[in-house]
Amino acid sequence: MSLGSRIVALGHYQPSRVVTNDEIAQLVETNDEWIRDRVGIVSRRIADSETVADMATVAAGKALANSGLAPTDIDMIVVATCTSVDRSPNVACRVAAKLGIPAPAAFDLNTACSGFAYALGTVDHAIRAGAARHALVIGAEKLSEFTDWTDRSTCIIFADGAGAAVVSATAEGEPTGIGPVVWGSAPEKGDAVRIEGWRPYIAQEGQSVFRWATTELAPLALAACERAGVTPGELAAFVPHQANTRIIDGIAKRLGIPQAIIAKDIVESGNTSAASVPLALSKLVERREVPSGAPVLLFGFGGGLTYAGQVVRCP
Image (tube, rainbow, N blue to C red):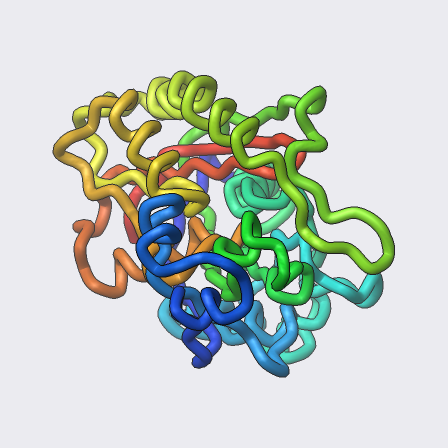
């Protein structure tokens, strides 16, 4: 058994195709200024032939390369996604096959936009219980396949991409790098974000989600800090789900963290659901905006309605 775990490396992938607000305005009645003001998005990445498994594999491969570990070292893969079309084999098994990881515990997890934080908490628990030592935790989504490009309220928001982390057991005497998870749901409001049926499109009640996110989530994010023994004033960065810049700003204001970097990858990447937190975190680390070992608050929320968050130490 291990006393804890830590993120040792990150990686991310985005499709090469950039779709601007002006291009969206050719599909529906909208414009660049309205989209920027409403959700804060300037552009988003949209996949062509790439599948969820393809994007997950590239992000995971980069994280694995950055970790210095070999594929044979990985004994667990958890993929957070709500947009995998195939029921079986799951995305985790496809990633294992593509990366040459021989015999990992491999499963997918679906809590939509909170998925990466849920998966990270699950893997941390598995490592603490001695069920794994080195794991890949991946958030990957191809939301464009489930977007109604005639619906102005949703087609301006969603995009595609993947982010991944290698999580390893901490050594004896080494401080833990992943704090206790705070997770839960508001199932009575679960219909506020939906992808239903056999030929589904994303549908959501935007105002309902906005009110829930801006009024109820900050205390839960603060609880994650408290459980980790970190004060808000000690945070180096806050990486929330990239849902909407107004939601991000609202939660950050209530947290009282003027010293922290607030991730706003949504501006250039759109809302990528379970991929948004690891994608934004990976970019912060790649740009060396957060020092190694510094505390970072991760917090995902969305479809279900579900939420999960934890304080991690930056790799």
